[in-house]
Image 1 (cartoon, rainbow, N blue to C red):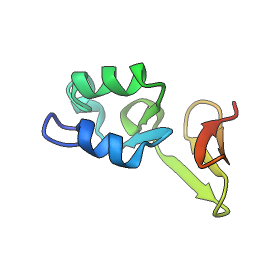
Image 2: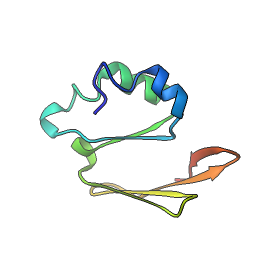
Image 3: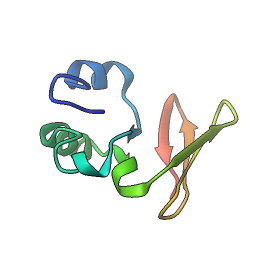
Image 4: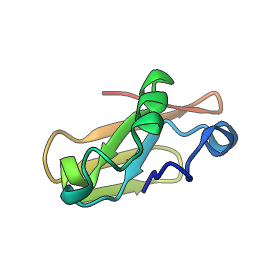
Length: 89
């Protein structure tokens, strides 16, 4: 959920995600994820999606590539390259 006491720099540095998917209700929009986390993730170039903004998120993988399909918006594709995951679109 990205509260101020979760998903901090130590965790993000250890897992280094290309995409951060946050499950949060519309009622908590603006408070979750914590603004400082959201700003840091975006500054680090991470794609951030929330259920408050995009609705249901469907993620699928073939063990190599990742596809994220939000209820609203366009599908996003991520590809593993040289030990990193990068967004293709």
